[in-house]
Image (cartoon, rainbow, N blue to C red; front, side):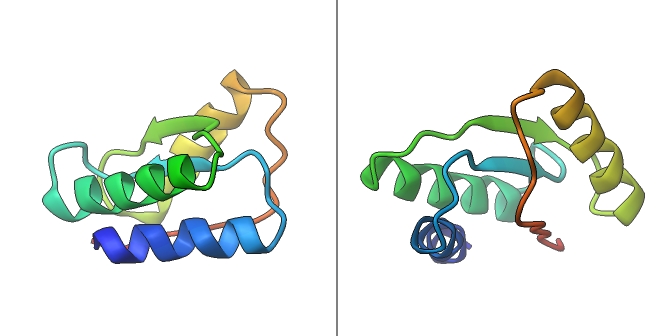
Length: 88
């Protein structure tokens, strides 16, 4: 899961994305924590920060959708260009 998060960061970096955000599932689930850690750590290594982070709750479509909407409403400069979903 850490490596997977890191690979996603590499993909976004190599694709030219500059304001990454992370919509997470449940905050206390180890798979989610590992993915978030791998993603954030790799962004830092690349010299890019995590622009925004939102906790979705459970690993359902509805929870992810709601979390993405909250994230965008709070961070108006975000213009999503790459939808990414992790399942639990």
